[in-house]
Image 1 (cartoon, helix red, strand yellow):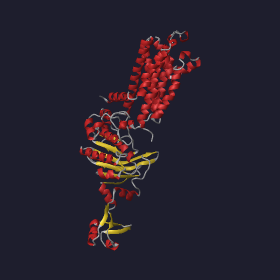
Image 2 (cartoon, rainbow over the protein chains, first blue to last red):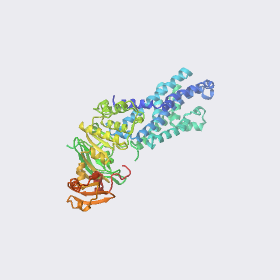
Image 3 (cartoon, chains in turn purple, blue):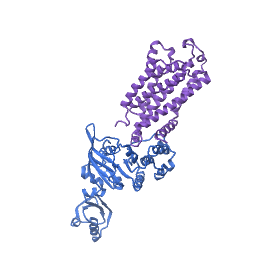
Length: 249
Length: 305
């Protein structure tokens, strides 16, 4: 097995040994969808949501939550812990660069996000008759853009956090505003105009709306694409600027 | 050709020199030690050799290559101070993972046997004892079948038995032809393992020789302590040509001198029918040599760098 495959394989194994992470990233989002879907009123179409049902609106929000859990919580905590424990430094003495470990971590997060998203889409379709994405190419593209923007922010957290615990804490605190603007508590369709404007500019607000747009068969709005790209570039550049392979002495 | 050549190495942190003109060479098959108190610049020196730090000036060649050369990393193993593994990785997974990094990995099963970790193969890192973690760390430094291994503070934090086990292991590794650069602040470790060593203080080499050589350059005075069974006049002792000084503490007599001191003193005691109880011969140690060379002890505690 080449180093990247072996690292991805090993990291994925280690990930599945953390029951709490597995629960929040892979098990909890589908459960949340099921809970919301069991409320009868959420399965009724409403004029307030442009003829959609609450459960239709929540499918992309739950998917955004999967992305956020991996990108803002799992990834930065893992990288910062590895740096704190000298694991990245230890790797730097081997023929394999620590960058390969970073790549393996990104591969794992992406693969597992896709897996959890597939489960959410399947449950939505089978149990609650949420239509599968109408614009499938656009949907996949938007999913990738949203994941990449979030992972860049996760890398920035990993770059700035002094320790694994700190990275975990920063990720958990950011979870609330990020998911608020993604519509976890108040879906965008019910947000006041001003909040929607702000939400448009957040990575997950733009992401959820784009997933919504492509799910219903249209193309995403250029503004939202630009917002996700903007966050990717800004956070990615800052992360590259500040990321250190070894803990400060 | 020397395996490691370090020439006039200088490295500063924020204007404070950590290493200030260190030079030494390590020959094939030897265990070369870098001994010094905490903060002397030992770790900085080997981190430059490992390619983890860039020297401010000076040159380093390992197997004829520059540190950090990708080819060199295939042929050099390293054990870092304070480097851990993920809590839940098993011994076997860690070895398989690191084996995948190298072109010609050693058989990890064989390494587990050598290091006495065979029955720990499926145990997670967090469940290993300090000694087992250290042995795993040594195993990882050897997994690439290196020609040279750099081991930094490999017995710090181990109990005396575990420390002795690790020493035996290192001797076994040398027998396989691996050249070893060893960093330590334990005098006993350096004396036991090293063929040659560099004594480092405040970023400079203060002595470079075999352990016995370093000791002999400083002082070849011996010291004998004993408790005489009957009264003994100091004058009888000081009359011996080998004796340079006599002192008493309580019932104990301490005789210092040179040459065949022990024989001279025991013969005198026998002639006077005196039996020496608790007889002890003290020789100059590396610790004494270090004190003589620097005015400080090896154990002086300073921030590690």
